[in-house]
Amino acid sequence: MTVFAAFLRGVNLGPVNKLSMPALRDALEAGGFPGAKTYLNSGNVVLSCPRRAATVERELAALIRDTFGLDLDLTVRTLPELRAVLAGNPFPDGNPSQVTVAFLSREPGPEAPDRVQALAAEHEPFVFAGREIYVHYTQGLGQSVLAQRFSAAVGVSATVRTIRTVEKVVKLAAD
Image (cartoon, rainbow, N blue to C red):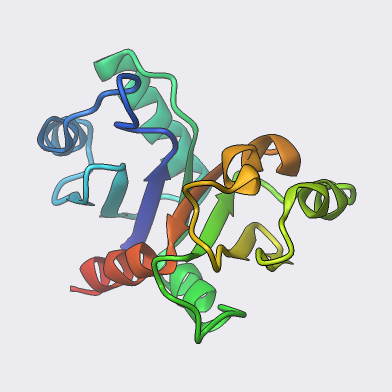
């Protein structure tokens, strides 16, 4: 069995894409993902199954669409991939609530770093690393133009989590 983490994009942000985590766990159980766990209300799911990551992504997206009527982007990573994300954090001394990882649906095009650079403030260093992008929002995310327009700048679906959240998801997945 492979342990996966799924990160749902745009869940429970304001009045859109409302999704109860207990209802999601029940739907996952009924849909062939027994023992699935969630962390926080923002769509972090840990599950184990013998399928490949791409298959899990498709099945989860279909299950959420069919059960809840939500057409959500999501990304799936294995536990070893998440551990590598944490080990590869280029901002290890940064505040873990201000260092983020964007999990991309696929690697972005070669123009993406220039588009991100055009939006990033001087105090928002970032590093592209395959299907992840790290950003250190040294002055927080609240007023950041980059944070507000990140996915559009990258050009592929991206769901962003803080390093702190990724650490908690890895701990949940390892239990």
